[in-house]
Image (cartoon, rainbow, N blue to C red; front, side, top):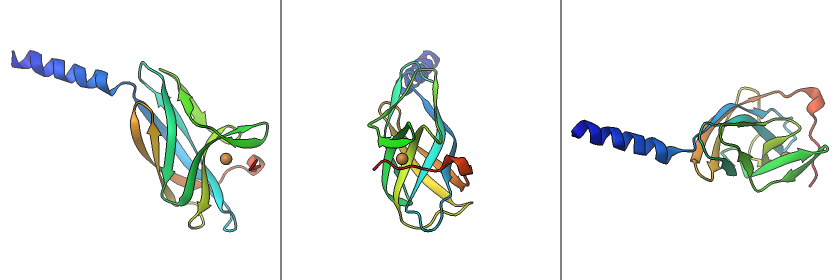
Length: 144
Ligand SMILES: [Cu+2]
């Protein structure tokens, strides 16, 4: 009897935890000391059976954190990024990214940025994103 109860609690817990997002390969672009902005990139995978949405982001090194999308070379703020059930979305140069605005200190290669991503259903996910160089051709054009 006890065993049956335990199993049903466990299954119930797993069901409650759906959908489940995982964040992989997070990194933040190293920028010159004069730059007050940078961007974070990552892969967000949804292993759940329901779609989820990235709705907010915070980080420890900039005053403002925004969710952005680059369209035709111009960046714009978006309210959320939809992560389809069983799918993944890549935040990468030229596409979706997390914008770090008003950096509190210059970002050097090898530094680590603590990001807190908030998903509508999965809640908060913390990631540590190393700072590294982007490619020269991925220059940022800011639309603000
Ligand atoms: Cu941006």
